[in-house]
Every structure is written in C-alpha cells, then in structure tokens.
Image (cartoon, rainbow, N blue to C red; front, side, top):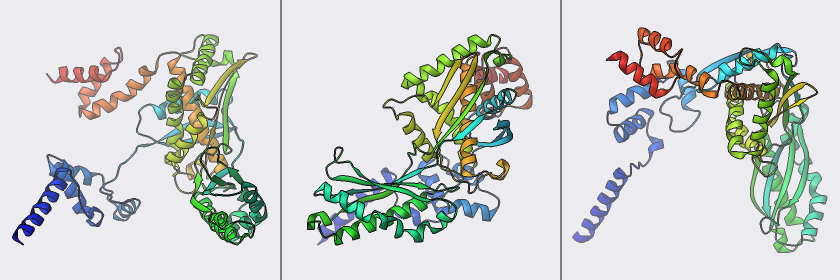
Length: 448
C-alpha cells in the first residue's frame, strides 16, 4: 500500500514538473484577467512587473469600451492597437473620397495619398462591379447509383428554396436571397464525394451567418428527404453530410478598378520621359504576370491598400486575403492581380479582384455610408493606388528611398531620440541612404 501511495505521489510530482517545464497550464480560461496576466508574466518574463505594466498600459481608460474589447475574443489580456490614417483626394467615378486605412506599415498611407493626387488630375479612378455572387456548399458522401441521386436532386430542389423561406425572407425583401443550387459530382477527386453548390446574393451584408444558416438547413433537408426517397436502397438513403460552410473564394463577386491617360500626361518630377516610364511600368507588370516569385510580392503590395481599408471598415481581411490569392492562381499558376498596357498612345492600368464585403460597422460615415458594391469599388481603388505607387517607385527611384525615409521615424522612436537628435539625424540622412544600421550607428555616434 505504501509503495502504491509513493508511486502515485511520484507520478503526480513528475506530471507537475513536466507541466511546469513545458509551461502548460490547466483551467486557464477560468482564471480572471488579472490572474491570466500574472501567470503569463511570471511564467515567461524575466521581469514580471515590467511585463504586467506593459500589458496594462494598452488597456482602454473607458471601462465600458475595454469590457467590449475583452468580450470580442477569449483569454484577453490587453489590446493590440493598429494606427488609423486617412488617404485624401481619391477621385472615384468623378466623386472625391477620403479613405480610412488601418495599418502599421510605414509609407502605405503616404503612397496611396500620392497616387490619389497623381490620378485626380488625370481623370481619376474608374470602377465597375462585375458581379456580387457569393458561394456556399454542403459537402456529402453518397454511396450508390449516381443517376438516382441526380433524379432525387431534380425532384427535391424546390424544397431547398421553400423550406428555407423563414431564413431568407428578410434577405429577399432587401433584394437578395438564394440564387441557385446545383448538384456537383466530385467523385473524380474523392470516392463518393458530392456537393450541393449554392450561390447567394446578400446585398449590403457580407452574409456569412445567413449563408451558413441556409446551408445547414439544406443539409437537414437533404438527409430527411433521402430517407423518404422510395427508389433509394437503404445504403443510398444514408447520405453522410460531412460539413456545410460558405466559401471565401468568390470568383463571381468581382470588382474592376482602372486608370488611364495619354502617355505624355504621365510626366512629373520623377517621370521626365513618360514613354520610357510607361514601357518599364508595363514590363514590370508583365513580369509579375509570368513569375510567381515576383507576383506574390506584387500582390502583397496591392493587399497593403486593400487590407488597410478592410480593417478600417470592420470587414474580415483574412477572408478577403484567402479569396484574393486563390483568384490570383485561378489559371493554375499564381499571377499578378493587376495588368497594364499601352495602346494607341494611351497608358492603362487596372485590376480585378474578388471582394465579399459588408457595410456594418467601421468608419463608413467617412465614406458617406456606401453600399456593399460601392465599398467594393473603394477598396479595389485603394489596392490599385498602392500598386501604382509601388511600381512607380520600383521603376524610377527604387522602393527603398521613400520607404526608408518613412521608416526613419520608427527607428528614432525605438531609440527614444530627443528633439535635438531627431533634427541632426534627419538633417544627416537628407543626403545619405537610410538603413537601420546606418541610423543606429549615427545615433550612437551622437551619444558618444
């Protein structure tokens, strides 16, 4: 008995020490916010008090607002703030906009603003919403005669519409709803794999909850009706639904944004020979069209503009990113989202991107409360403007010149530079290449 107790004690001690060594914790979600912070600080930081002070430094002084932040996600310990800026002077379809942008990367807002100003005097941006169709799927397994499944679907299809009217009624009143449902045979990809592939119009809502609610009801109808379908065998009646979920790939929810002007009108401070610039610009875009390594960075620049507006308007940038990058690879190879050409002396630059957006929350009043389609246009323009700014820099002065000068302030903040040090650093780097190591060395020489 004594040996058994000792063995139990040793096992418990070993388990405790392993947990401590692996920094595991039991029941963390049940701890208070203060307890969570204390555990994090004492477990991971050499100076727990400093860690606690830093985390609490970013709490909101408005208790109600902080409570709202705390309840957004699980296990909250602090807030992570992203700077919110604005890019003015965007002329879109002959109307001026000031676009909010939430992003932490230097030079993005400045570049977008510069592009906006450049194109405002050359006719501005033109946009077209090509389609606003969204997609959801019920993924299921069917073992049996495919021709009988196809007949079953034809005879049951009307019920998918009629038996979801309690869900779709309000959306239909706004002009949206279920557009179509098709049966997709995917057995060439996986054994016994089929889909109900549904398309939706969700108007000014992103529509995730609406679509998923419809899909789950489709799944229930599918299983119930299959059980009652007389020509199915017992095995065929047992349709196995794997999952019902919307898709963030929306290749038929597309917006186009474009700019154009005579080549000679491209002339400005850094473009002294507009014909050469236009030809280099088009060549740079063509490289991104055929070279995936370049295309990824090229499209990342577009997403700098798109994501910043997505965040500022309360939309889901992760869903947009996933859908956009899938669209960039729709031809089987990852490629540029934007395109350019020179034709009959006219320079044209455009992009088409899939954007499933909603207009609830965010800084929409600043944008004069746009519809979902109008917001798609504004977001696409931000992406095109950012891409133009990047390509103009790459094909003229180089990307680092402007970017590192904008980054200079971040380095000075990191080293808590005084006003006098800032003045001397900025004066020095007016005529020197800005690099992180160069700035650090110069600050250290000043302090010696």
